[in-house]
Image (cartoon, rainbow, N blue to C red; front, side, top):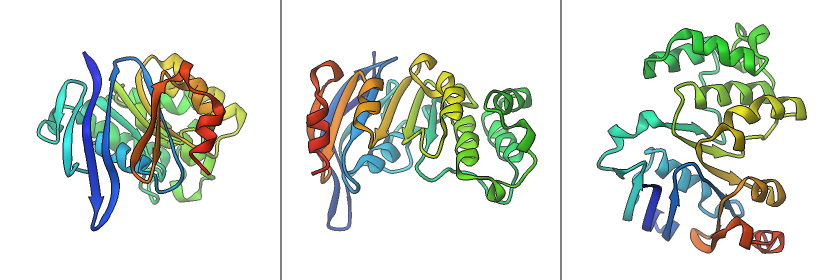
Length: 225
């Protein structure tokens, strides 16, 4: 069964086409990396896959569920790491994660496990607004995997992380995590190394769709010119 099936997907905001006629298919356990300049439609695509936006045209299936009709049946299987972390700034890291755990019926022991794995236990009581951007990103990563989702949607997942933090995060959201992933990236070399399938977007349209082994760095770099 394909984890993702997109056929003619389109979304507009007023007269602006954010996505137009995007189609692809990807099996479970694989990684799709989406490249493209700012405004290309990457974040819009991620939000549609996360059931946060409805497409205006085309058909879409995520983990065997048709969207948006069956969004209720797939939301609990999706982990989203957005460009702007979806955290309550006045709550502590621990409080944010406990709140998310209650929404998904996850035991609080999982919260403590992830705080420890991401080396955040010593800062877990502090309000998110007082944390550095790198530490906020660690909390957001913990939130995205807290409920052990089948599909991870990751927008620049290693942004603001130093090498030590990347090493801590990799087993949770990286290739070795063994999850189906969609990654939006501005890093041609790093993103290509993570990819099984590459999608290049420009002005909302698919201009590149191939297996990663058949894509050169030059083709990805050209998307940004």
